[in-house]
Length: 195
Length: 195
DNA sequence: ACCTGAACACCGTTCAAGT
DNA sequence: ACCTGAACACCGTTCAAGT
Image 1 (cartoon, each protein chain N blue to C red):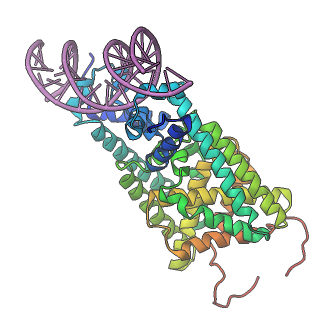
Image 2 (tube, helix red, strand yellow; image 1 turned 60 degrees about the vertical axis):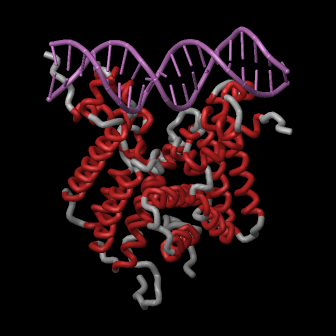
Image 3 (spheres, each protein chain N blue to C red; image 1 turned 30 degrees about the vertical axis):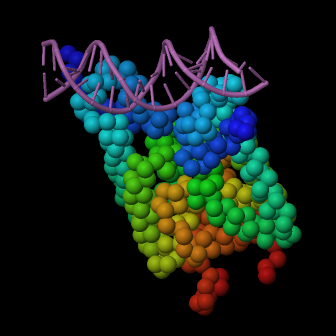
C-alpha cells in the first residue's frame, strides 16, 4: 500500500544515521534514498536540515532521559544505583549503537550545544541527588558528581580514541570502584568519627 | 611580491580552521578564499582533501607531543609533573584555541582515528611512566594512568558540554587532588601500615 | 494534503590551458 | 614549477506543478 512517510519516519531514520555515522550523516539526500523518497518530499515535513537535526536531538534527549530514569528506579540502595549507572554508561554507549557518541562529537555545533547542555545538566542533577542520598553534604555531592561524570564521559572517549584499551574488566572495575568509593566525604576541617 | 603559497601555508591555515570550527571547516573552497588563491592551486600541493586532513593531523600530532614533553621536562618531582600535566590539560585546551577538541570531535572519522590512537597511546605511556616514577607498581600505574586520562578527557568534554560548569577553582582542584592522591597504591591483599 | 522533478548555490575534484 | 578557469558531481534548498 505504500503509505506516505511521516515526520517521525524521517526523524527515526536520522537518529540511526546519527548513531552510526555522526551528525554529518543526518543528510537529506542519503536519507531520501534510504527511505525511497525524493528530497522534495522531505521539505513537506521539515522546514530545512536544521529542523531535522532539531527533531533528532529532541528524540535523543527524550529517550536518553527515559532510559536512565527507568534504570535507576529499578534499584533502592543509592550506592547500588551509582554502580548501576556506571555499568549502564560503560556498556553499549561506546559501541556505536548509542547516539551519544555522535552527539558528543558535534558538541560545539550551535544546534547541538543547547540540547547537550540540558542533558548534561539533568544528568548532573541526578548524580547530585544520588551522592546526596549516599550521605554527602551538598558541596561534596556536587564535587563528586562532577568528578564521576567527567570520568564517565572520559571513559567513553578514551575507548573511542583507542579501542580495546578499556575492555578489561579489571580496569572498568577500578573506575566503578573509584566512583563508589567517592561516595564518602572527603577529608576537610570538620571532625568526623573514624570507622 | 606575492610569492606563491607553500604546502605548509595551506596546512597551517587548515590547523587554525580545525581549532576554530572543527574538521568540517578544513574545506578547500573556504581556505582558498581565506588565502586568496584558487581551488586549482590547492590541487597542485595536495592530492585531495584527505591529503590536507592528513597533513593537518600530522602537524597537530607533532606539536602536541613536543609541547607536552617540554612542559614535563621543566619539572623534576613526578608528583609535581602529574599536577602540572593536569593544569596544562585543563587550561587552554577547552578554550577553542587548541585543536584537540576538534580532533576529538572527529574521533570516529577513519582518517582521524589512527592519529588520535597514536597520540592517546603516547600520552598513556607518559602517564604510565609518571605513575611508576611516583612509586606505583606496573599494574597500579596502568590503572591510575587510565583513570587519570579518562578524567582529563572527560573534564574537557564536560566543559564543552556545559560551559561554565567547571570553571570554579574549587572543582578543578578536586580533580587535580584526585589524580595526585591516586599516586598511591590502591588497597589490595597486601598488608600495609596505617597512618 | 502530500509528493515529484527541475532548477540553482555550494564545495570537492579534474583538467586543459596559461605563465 | 605553479596557478587559473571552466567543467562536472554531490547535496541543501526552492518552487511550480502534479495527484
